[in-house]
Structure formats: C-alpha cells, structure tokens
Length: 331
Length: 289
Image (cartoon, rainbow over all chains, first blue to last red; front, side, top):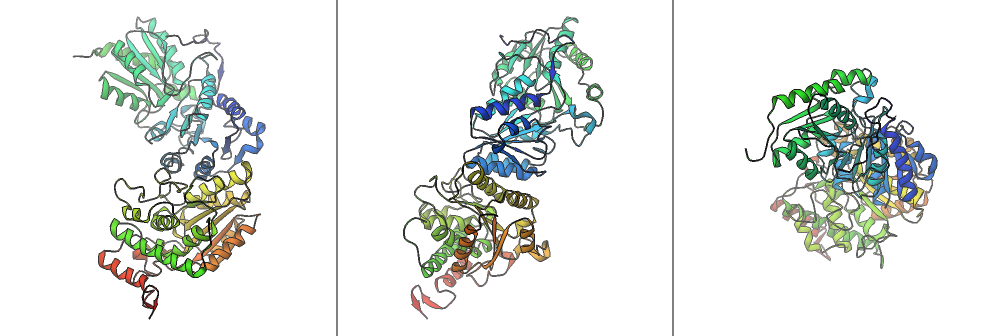
C-alpha cells in the first residue's frame, strides 16, 4: 500500500470541494491537451462546471438546450466525426432520461461519448427524490462497453476526467453537488479499472466508491477505538471492477462491506456481490439505498436517516463483524 | 458516386434491381420489413448512384458525404443499394439477419464498413446526423461535405426527432439534408389513425428548416431536390418524399400490414414476377409486351 493520503483526513479541518469542481478543471485541461475534446450541455453549464471549458474554448462548446436524448445522439454524431464529446447534465436526466440513446448510439455504436452525471446521489438533498439520482450506477453498469467511474473527491475527479478523455470508450462519470472532503493528493494514483487500499486492516474490508470512501476512512478510525481493524479499499472505477485488489483484500479479512449513496440493487454493492458470489463467497454487508427513494432534506439529515452517516455505519459494521464469522476459503 | 453517372433510365432500372434483391433477401431471412424498403428504393438509388459523393471501395474516405439511416428497420434497402454500389458482394445480401452475417437486422456500424451509425430504436438518426453536420460546419470546417439522413414518417412520433430538429434549426446546419419517407403507414395502421402528423411542412418550417415536397418515386425529382437542398446553405433541409409503401409489388402497395412482414416463397415469386415485368408492361427484362 503506497497510496498518498492527505494527513488531515481525520480532522475537522479537512478541505472540502464538490467533485464537479474537479470535473470542470479536468475538462478544461483535457481540452488543452487534445483539440478533439468538445463539450455539450443541456442548459446546466455552470452547475455542471462546464463553464470553465466553455469560457476557455467557446468554439468547442455546444449548447443543446433541455433535451437530454438529443444531447447523446448529437454527441454520437460528433464522435463519429472524430471528436471526443463530453456531455453534461444532472444524473437524474442524463443518464436518467437518455439511457436508450446511450445504449444504442454510444455503446452498440461503439463511440467514445462521455456521459457526465452531476448532482448524483443523496447530496442533491433539498431537491428531493426526483433529482436524487440513485439508480445511475446500475443503469450504466449493465450496458456492455460502458466504463463507470465515481471519483472519491475533487482531486480524483480531475484525474478521472482526463483519463476518460483518452480511453476511447463510452464512459460515465458520477459527480456530486455538495462539497465533500478531499482525501487524495496530486500524487495519489488514478487509473481506470484500479482500486486502491487506503488503510490496512485484517478484520473486515470496507469497500467504498465515490464520496463514500472518505466516510469509510472515518468509520475505520472509529472502529479502531473499538478494537476492530478495518481495511479501507477505494473503488473509483465500478466498471471494469478491479477484481484482483478487491479479492486480495477480502481474502485477507474474510468479511466485506460496501458503501455507496445509490441503490445497492445493481449498484456498486451489486457489483461486489456478483464478484464475491462468483469468485469468493464471503459474508457481505451492503450499505446504501435498499429499494427506496430519497426525500427532501439537508444531506446530513438524509445520510443519517438512511444509515449512511459515520455513526450509523460504524454501528452497522461493528454489528456485522461481531455477528458474522469470517469466511476462509476451503470451508 | 465516383465514376460515370447513370442516366435516369439506368437509375430506374437500378432501383428495380434493388427492389428485386429486397424481395430475395426478405424471403431468405423469413423476417423483416417489406413496405418501407420497397417504397424508398428510388431515393436510395438516387442517393448512392447519383447524389452522394462517396467511394464504395474506400468507405472511410475522409472527403465523403455521409448517410445516416434513422429508421433502421428499412435496412434491406440500404444493404441492397450498398451492395449494388460496390460496398460488398451482392451475393452476401442473402445472409440478411442470419447468425454471423454482417447484415444485422438493424444496421450496425461496427459490423459493416460503409454503415455510418447504428440505428433501430426510432428517432435517433437525425440527432446523430445533426451532430456529424455540426462537426463539419462548426468544428472541422469542411463545407464541401454533406450529411444525408432518412427518416420514416411514423418515427416522427418520437420526441427526440423534434429535439434534433430544433437543434439543427438553431445552428443552421446547412450541410444537413434529411428525407422523410412520407408513406402514410406505420405498424398499427395509417399515420393519420395512429398519430396525425400534419401540418408536416409547417412543423419543419417552424423549426427553421427549408422544406421541399416531392414525388419520392421520381428519381429526377429526388436528384433535383437534393441539389436544391445543397444550394440552401443557411438552414437544414428536409425533403418530404411522398411514397407508396411496398412500391412495385401491387399486392403490397398501400397496405400497412406489409410494414413489418416478409413475403413467403409464393409471395416472393409473385413479387419478383411483378418487378421483372414492371407489372406486366414487359414480358421479361428488356422486351416490350
């Protein structure tokens, strides 16, 4: 394990920034590096942070209006002309509304359309259930050829944006509206398809995706005081999943927990359940949304209500560790 | 089309050859759509043998005009025309819809060189064509290339069509030239019964398009309309081509039931006889009755 973490991640003074801000910077940087990069937006340019790109490259910015299906179809046509189109909207609308266009015109058609879903998850609190996109991981993960990335913080979001600009594949980037803690550094690695062990332990593997990873780091710290040594694995790429890193950790600890602010059915928890079911059946506890919609409220209240806050997750993991025998291959 | 141009008579004959192959393909496949492919054979022939600047031996020629099929279910006419134009052997047409064939039930870019985009779910071809036209006009600056698209009239029910129409109108995509196959049928019946489309001309005009209405079986009209559309550089163009579904096979013409049905072997035999004799006008090819 040599993943450089910030040294203030457990303090109250840890810096915070929305992951979408990293996307905004990353897109501008990707466009500076490659003139084929173009940006399309469905009337949400500033809130998806695409304005940084628009202001720097107005001739490569395309406003499509509130029309998410056409957003993707046009991007597919641009890609066929040799460009690398990034499409920005809220995740509730794209991929929420544009799923079939993504499947047909980007994925079956094998064009490197980049789908950027901002304001995903419970962090879109006050707007309520219609705007809290919780199904996007499942929707995108199930389509062949699609790459699915949920960056853990804004620093990683910038790297992930630059990475999907050059991967030549249809790709989905999941972003959040609210400021979340930054745990990675400029020197921390990011590679599509790689998971990273952030903290070592031997009692349980805590697998986090997106902004839940920082929460798991705090939970692991709280568990330490209770004598439970949790390993924290950050899984920013949900597809393709880094089977090897996850299996290596779970083989060592014998218990697995996943955490996501999304539907666990078909989501990240679903992906890990499939992997463990296929390769290494292991007691698994999935933390996330259980076949339920969110509702309006401050994110802090919603996280607490749905059991995704630090205290609730600590209790959940502690009870899981104490009630479930660890699995070792061969029993 | 590179090489010598065909005369109007030769183009009519070519369209008839395309129709015969459509019947043969559909009979061999045992499934697929008859009415739309037969109805648009004249437009496809005009496109691939006269209107478009393309090289069948070099499908990715960077200077080519591109064609986007939005109503992917009329794939048989696209395949038959492409084969006759020289993209692949005509014999391969009989593999339509079979396992391992490059001729998928709905066209797929990754399967067959010369197919510009994957289509099937209706309404998506116009947006893809508009994106390509935007790239030519606004980014890559290639004013001499044109983007042609084909839509069915039934698929104009789809909301995305009008999102794309608004987009192309806003950006004045003068290099985008779309055909609507106005054959008045869709799967469940006439377009008027299922979901009326009129005032169709007015709809497109109000979205900022240049609109022409033509006889979709008059190849000279098709070529002239495309030429006019290329001359209109300040707006996208739509050519509403009035066609007869099932054109050329009397028992299929005008009947919506042939929208999504292939001929059986007897029907195919009858259809081929109709096409071979131009509905009884000649005894066999080349000989007057």
